[in-house]
Length: 355
Figure 1 (spheres, one colour):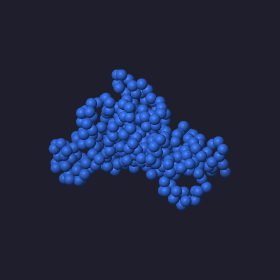
Figure 2: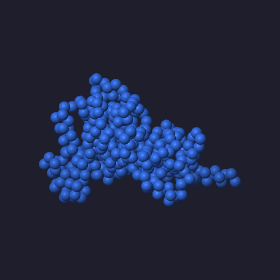
Figure 3: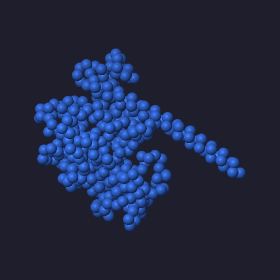
Figure 4: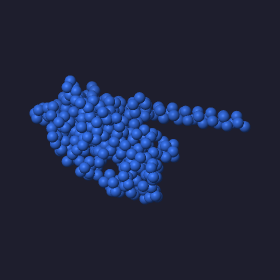
């Protein structure tokens, strides 16, 4: 593709390249990652690339390495491009790293909107939606709810569900889709804007791959048969990939994530639970925990039916999780610093012995 702007390139990237005298490099966007190799979209087409040794060993954290959606600067060659630098990200989709205490895992970068997909069957979970929305806010990504497999509900059932979600998550855009009915994903496709990047997120089996295929108008993603018992497909996506839709938008598919831990950004949680946050300003005590304190505006709102008690419960759960992650991260930094100091002392003693 000759036009990088069609891939989401913008003026901010141009200004950064000029300011840092990096015009000698070509730019590209990471479309796929396979362990240590990448597929990068460039003016010259899709190119296979690897990162330079200097980039690998100069980054301060693994999250500084390229991920799908990143804009990178490249050293061109005949068969294999070298990724010299990752350009600054304007947004990121990040979660707690699985089984690595105090670490984060970067899922994708430079996303304008996350399409949070949930199927309207027995797996529908409002708490999970609030979790996804909090992670979007933490990464400067606009959340959009997509209710998939709406053919499983009657019109009245669907309207009731939409109304219930709207009361608990006011202000979050919501769309519906189904891939069983012809053109069931057409409204979703029409709502996406050219040159903007969208990311499909959601648990396994909610139909993300089927939605991708419907919007691409071809089978680019593998899908599994729907179980007659559970009315859901098996998880088939195993990697992240960026696609360019025929009408101009860009979309990133992600594997279903069973574990989706929030990081230490409590401000994003408050933004998700904006009603609770605004109500708490009217509590008698500034440190009100909204459990049993007198004159608690949040508890009063629950009694009056203005606030869902389950939303308050999830709010507290995510806050505690964020605080634990922050403490774990601080403890990890402390341990890493101590290990670094010990290593320097050992090397110092070894050098003394040489003489």
